[in-house]
Image 1: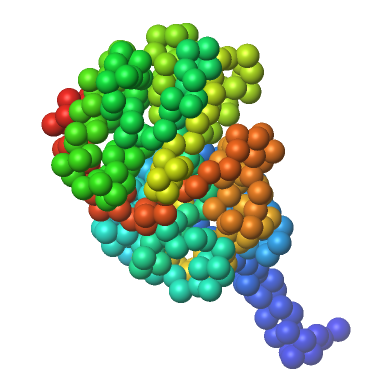
Image 2: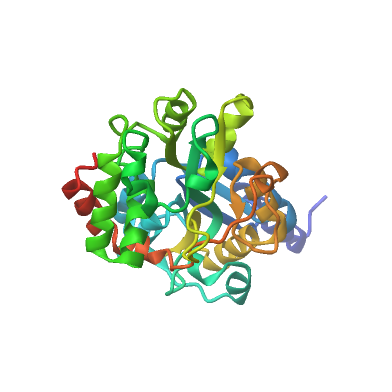
Length: 340
C-alpha cells in the first residue's frame, strides 16, 4: 500500500525534531556557572536549594582565589563563568578593580545586605560575615584587662601576644581597615607595638595561634571566629575565651566577608542575579550560618546557636572596600614594622 506523501514528510520532520531535542537537551534549560574559592561543602547546600526552588542548575568550579582571578583574566570574553565567589573583601575589590565584575542594581540585595558589606559600585556583595576578634587564655587573662586591638600594643602585653603571619590576607585586611580608621602613622605605631609584644614568631594560621594560647605559650591572639568555633567543638575543655574588642569607643569589631559578584562577561546574567539574590535570602543565609559557623550577612537572620552563645557585638561599619583600597599600604606598613 502506498503511503501518502504528506504523512511521509510529517514522519521525517518529527524524527528530525526529536533527534535535535535528544542531542541538544531541553531548549529552555538554564544554568549558572560559578567560579568559587569556597570549598564544595560550604556552597553546595545553597546551590542545591536554589536549583530545587527555581529549576536553574548551578555548575561550579572550586579553586584558590588567585587561580580563579587569573583564569577569569585569561578567559576574558570567552569565560563560561557567570559568578565569582571568594573570601575576603580585598579579593573581591581586586576582582572589581581589574574589570572582572559587573554592577548589579538590585533592591533585593540592597535590602538584604548592609551598606558597609557591599561594594559602593554594586559590583560585589557580602554573603557571610567572619569577625576577627581577640581570643585569650581563661586561666591567665582577666577579660576586664582586655579592651581594643590597639591596646594589644601596650607594654602590659609584652611577651604575651601571638599573631598569625602577616602574609595572610585576613591580617592584611585588618591592618588596612585600621589605616582607614586611624591613618597610616598611628596604625604603624600600633603594629610596631604588637611586634614588640610577641611571645613567639608569627604563626602559620589562626588555629596554631590559639593552640599556643591554650598551651600557655602566649596569653592572647587575634583570629577569625569560625576557627575558634571549630577548635572548641573538637575540645570544649580548652582554656580559651572570646572577647569582642572596640565596643566602648564605638568603632566596633573588625569584620570581613565571603561574597560574590557577577562576572563582566556572564552569558546568563539574569539567572546569575537571581542566584545572587537567593544567596542573600532567609533560606540561604540560614545555610551559610550553619555550615561554617559564620555570621549571616542578612541582619534579619540569627546565627547558629553555638555562634549566638558567643554574645552580640558592634561591628566596625567602615565600608569593606577599604580593605582592598588600602591593602598594598597595609602590606608595606607591616613590613616596615617588622611584622613577618
